[in-house]
Length: 144
Length: 144
DNA sequence: ACAAAATCTTAGCAAAGGTTAAACTTGTGT
DNA sequence: ACACAAGTTTAACCTTTGCTAAGATTTTGT
Ligand SMILES: [Mn+2]
Ligand SMILES: [Mn+2]
Ligand SMILES: [Mn+2]
Ligand SMILES: [Mn+2]
Image (cartoon, rainbow over the protein chains, first blue to last red):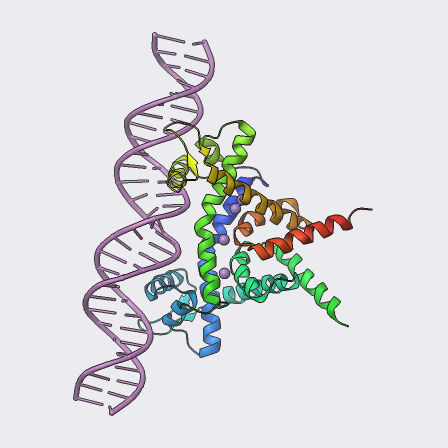
C-alpha cells in the first residue's frame, strides 16, 4: 500500500484528488447561480465570472458534459443535469459555511471571499461540521 | 480591468495563483524536512513521501532548479538555495499554524493532517493571523 | 572485482487548464 | 433584407503534473 492511514502520503493524495474535482465544483456552482440570476447561463457569463477566455469555458463545459454534470446544445445555453444540480447545491452550501466561518473569525469580507474560494475544496466533512458549529455558537453569542 | 477589487473574478484569480505556487511550496518544505531528518535528500525519498513516481519528482525538481529554489548535480542529492530555504521556512510555519488551528477547533489528528495540506496554500496573511491568535487564546484557556 | 540493487535520467505519452487566431452561428436593429 | 454585434466553436499551441519503459549511473555486498 502507498503509506499508512494517517501518513503524509495520504494527505498529498487527498489534496490532488480535491484539485481534480475543484473546477467541476466551481463551474456547477456558478452555472446554478447565473441561471438563478439571469434565467439562462451563457458561456460568456462564465468566462467573465472566472476571468478566463471563452475558449477555456467551452472546453471545461465539454468536460462537464462528458462527466454527466451539464447539458447544452451547440450555440445554446448551458444547463445542469440532476447530478450537476446536486453537486451545485452541495458545493454552494459548503462554500457558504466556509465563508461564514471566516467571517465569524473576524476576517474582512474581501479576504473571506477570496480565501473561501480556495479553502472550500479542501474541507472534509469533519472540519465542515466543526466550522458550522463554530458559526452557530458565534451567532447565538451575538444575540443580546 | 477584469473585475473590481472584491469581485468573485479576483477570488478565482487568487486561487489559480495559489495553485501555481503550491507544488514548489510543498517540495521545498519536504526537502528541508528530509534533509533535517536524514542529512541528505534524494529524489526517491520525495517520490515516496508524495506518492508519485520518481520521474515526476525529477521533472518537478528541475523546475525548482530553473526557478532558483533548489540545486543538485546529476545523480546527486537535492539541496535548497537561500531562496528555497526561506520559502521552506515560511511554508512550514504557515502549515504548522493551519494544522494547530484545526486541532484547536477539535479536529482529529488524521483529518487535521489531511485538510491542512490543502488549506495551507489558500490562507492569506489576514486569515493566518486570525488562526494564530485563535490557537494562542485556546492554549492559554487550557492552562489550569 | 564485479554483480546486484538502488537511484537517476531520458524519451514519449496523456489529461487538465490556460492562450490566440480564425471561422461559424445567432440575434438585433434599421 | 441584411449588416453587425455577440456568442460559440475549432484549430493549434503552451505548461504543469502525472504516467511507463528503457537506459545510465552510483552504491553496496560478497
Ligand atoms: Mn472554489
Ligand atoms: Mn487548492
Ligand atoms: Mn505543506
Ligand atoms: Mn500542501
